[in-house]
Image (cartoon, rainbow over all chains, first blue to last red):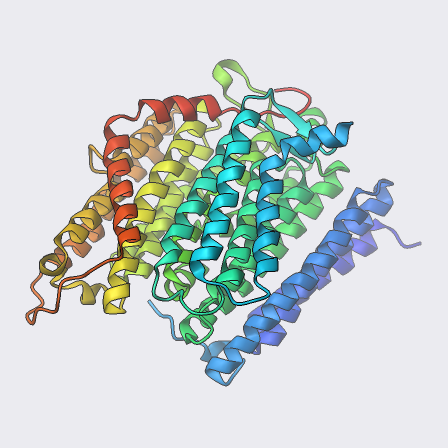
Length: 100
Length: 490
């Protein structure tokens, strides 16, 4: 029987993988994928809680998360394009004009 | 018709959305910056007029308690409208923002404003998330608005990575809160946490994760790493807006979340009782922000970077008022919103005026400005001293309110930290002034700023001095606005 705990375990794993991707990936696209994983982990949590609590609020919130994740990805990719235009690379380590 | 009366409460937001659409439609052909700014300003003016009769209404909730309408929300919405109008005027004669793209710039700016106004009345976890994203996503694009400038693109990339990560972490925290309470409404959170016993560890984890999202929005340490790079790389007029509008919006939603969702109904003297130990967390973040901001600002060579660290420090001062949970603290925070907006927009206006003439924001390039533009330097001096909290300027009155509230709330150690930090900050503000008086040697021509900038500068200077001496009306207004209303008690 699959219970709430299973869903939460998967979501914690997704969250951890997302954080790892952001920390370890040097490619900007890879970093953005890590961010998507974190958003999906939160979305999974909302849906799982919604199902086991028996109210629909969480599912509605998840729909919003999916839409906003798409909007955010569009904006982020546009910015990565603009970075490639200026720097000829999408390696986040080589984008370092601004320093203190 | 519940829907119609609910929509009436959102009339200012609807007008802002309407102006946004109008600007967007007009963008089908290239338009001048003057025209687009004029339309946006007119729309915001109408929204402000529509807000006035609403602010007199009794507190109530709308749209199934997704948003609330109370004095606090009205004040914040009016503040956001005025701050955005000032930011539009700042952008209008900026040399960076010329050529094509006027429509896009103002469309995005109005979208940010819409998000900020929704945050002011947010009463549900979903509204918190939606509002923050509506503020953040257009902000990423505005930071990278100068497509030919590599620094601007880099600012946008750093902003989007930090921003999306912070909102993602926050969202995970919010999902835990939803799981614990079974509802996303703030009154359900309050009811749950004041009623039954709860798992303090899990709630603590959720609150810390949520704080990552708020902390990034208000640029408080340790969520501030994006701020210096983004402030430096973004167009200066947008940086000015960012340091005033979205920061205040972050504070507004932070206050809503913690005061409505995680505090019990007011006790004696209107003090709220916190559920779980979040005030201690915020107090620590406040002290950390002050130290990190002020100490890092000491070694900066770029004016916009210096102002970024200064803004981190000021977030610390304002956080001090949040953890008190008193109406006095809330009033001090609202007063500081206004004071900080006036003096910080003033500083950024001078930075824009200088950069228009010299093309540089390095502090070294400010050498000898005194002989080229004495009035400009005098105005800059006034704003910087106000930021440092020197009487009789508005910054002093604002800080006085904050410190007084901290002492009244018996948070003595934090008040002492804030006073020490004010002293540190004086050093780097005066350092900038000193550079401006140093002779540059060869004398270039005097600066000739455009009339719009000179007029705006005069207004901000007058406000900085006048509100420092006659702060009575603002005191009354903020006092009346420092009331949060929660549906179902309090």
